[in-house]
Length: 216
Image 1 (tube, helix red, strand yellow):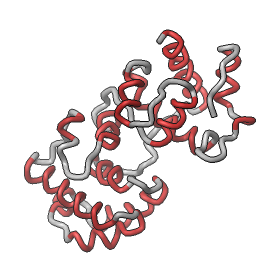
Image 2 (cartoon, helix red, strand yellow; image 1 turned 180 degrees about the horizontal axis):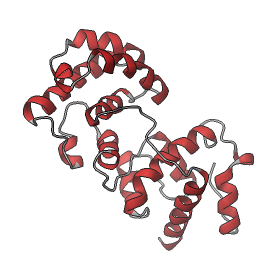
Image 3 (tube, helix red, strand yellow; image 1 turned 60 degrees about the vertical axis):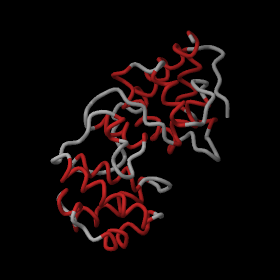
């Protein structure tokens, strides 16, 4: 555990130096919009989601408008994100739960968030970190892949990875750490062709932890 803890702390430090600014790649203004964008991001790129939500949030500018929305119209707009019928249904249902049942209040625990239609642990943790400012690990594909390569977890199960990392990453750094992993995953440590030769993180880690190597 000591070795993993040391590696985790160094990863946090190095990523902060490489990417001093860390923010969610999904674009939103209101917390409920982040929940909707998070739902749309399932099996879809954040870049495509951001294109789709520009039109979606313009046509439905309030939580109430989403709660009362025609599901078929929402589905028509979100079609480019895939699984559009299922996503549209859960978005309208979730908005209704928030507006009519919770009076617009965003739940403050993962357990309560995941009771909402279409909200899984990944989006719930995104809300916990970005909206509520609480410790959260967003175990998306980038997080799972990269932390596995750096030896922080052996699992590919999102919930297991989340629990593994909560033991290693300082609570106040956890949310931004995950955002930086997304940027790093896109820039350098991709799934199919990681650019190990020019990897700034690997270089920094090797300088500070002689003998360190990742598993690609």
